[in-house]
Length: 325
Image (cartoon, rainbow, N blue to C red; front, side, top):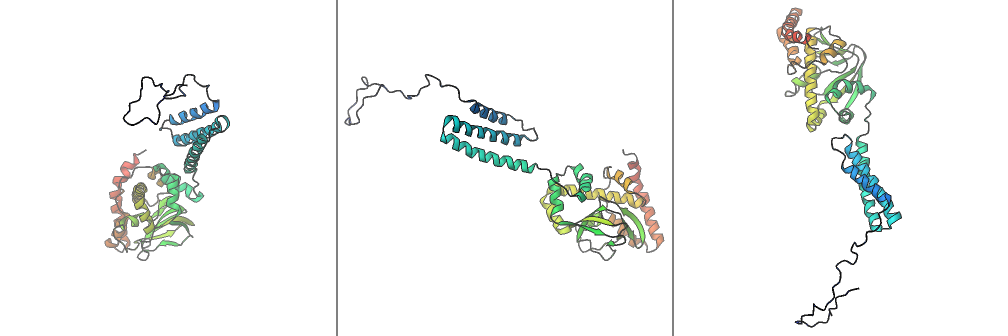
């Protein structure tokens, strides 16, 4: 073996004779002869890494596949380093990578788990929220923390005019039928998957302390989903997407109630058809129409004049709607 014969005791200022000095190779393990190929396990592990990295991001489950393949690759590297290479450092590092990727994989699979919606709320979700692409987990958060399901028997009142405050709650009817009346005069019905007090919710967003101007009574045994208004408002402020969804749903519900005022005999089947049509006047407030009754007349003639007035105005809505698919 060649060595460089330079003494460490060479005096300072003396230049060593480099011409006669022998050189030492920079790397004694220079790849003059390539070693044999590693075991098949080593190559399968690298194939897993390569496959995980080339998965397109447009694939819906690409992150789950990526973490899964990285986890398998790390496990194969540990097997290779332990059984065929006997390399402790390779085994330790890949053990760390295995734990990290496995935890990510478990978390991603957990997020993709099917969300179980309560049976009583499934029809509500499928009819109102699923068509608007509200994720099941977001709907579960909306209905799982600050709301409850309440019941009313036939003849019981949800709200009494001039008595019940409109500030406390917002509700959606799940089962049964309710009827809305003003001073004993029938106005319209409320069917399942419709807001019970959407006009009051919209009209009192700026003015608090108002009372219901109508009476809402259960015409059948009813079941409804009830939110605390204050907590719902706070939750919607933290969820901008759901806030816009609620604005749309409440506006469309108000439109449907305008149709119902024009045609009090509107049944549930017809209301579903209207529900599929675009909202034409979602900003109109039925609350204003209800309140205008009190200013017209206390007699039945005044009520009939009001209904004829709404009939002429709402004909602008029903006319185009008849031609909608």
